[in-house]
Image 1 (cartoon, helix red, strand yellow):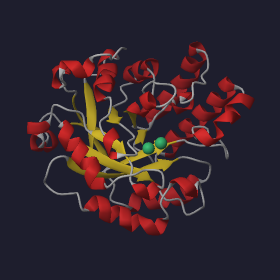
Image 2 (cartoon, rainbow, N blue to C red):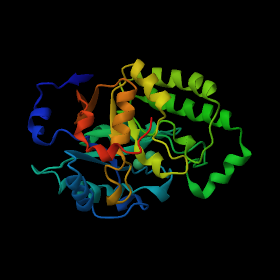
Image 3 (cartoon, rainbow, N blue to C red):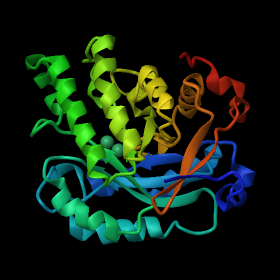
Image 4 (cartoon, rainbow, N blue to C red):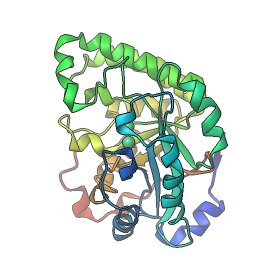
Length: 298
Ligand SMILES: [Zn+2]
Ligand SMILES: [Zn+2]
């Protein structure tokens, strides 16, 4: 259930610093491909006036799924300790989350484990089609030997299944297969993505506007303006993430993401607490200095 938080304590407790968007997607070195201390991620957020951040490092999968990009299960306590040390009354407020992947068979472990942890937010991602990490630059040449539209169709089927598990709170970087510039014609994309968004809405899930795509060859926010508009039509609540793998990327390009949300008709976003979503008004465009929006085009 999404709760409206106009009078809620979440808005109240964070009022003085409430005119910037929280960043709900950042990693730690435990995933083996991020750098920097958790304190430095928070310091960057603090310097930008960001009121709240959520660490969502890659979930452990003791079944042997993709061990190169995630912590082991026995490192999870280090993650809890690292982030837990920042959970205090200072600003920016720090939330504890996880980015968990959907793949065939993931329910065996995640179905038991996620519910036993004290997460504020669980992002759901798809990074693999069978054993191909389609967003991994090391194997991007595989894109040259596949049918692009079919690949997207397969990817979207996996995201629909992700939603159907009801294990995740938010769908992350929804159109990430565009990372290196491979994408189907817009008409096909629209046709394929609508049932996925229906499943996301039906599952009561949120959707992330992820600015890391701007730092990738595609040079665009995930997902595209079209998908954000289609999500708005279905009242899918949104949150914002930089997907920072180093402290200096925290909060990166958030004015562009705010503009994208507003252009799609969004007036609200959500804040997370213990896996519940609290809907709050988007900051006004005046929340960011005018120069932050220079060069931001729809
Ligand atoms: Zn991801
Ligand atoms: Zn991530």
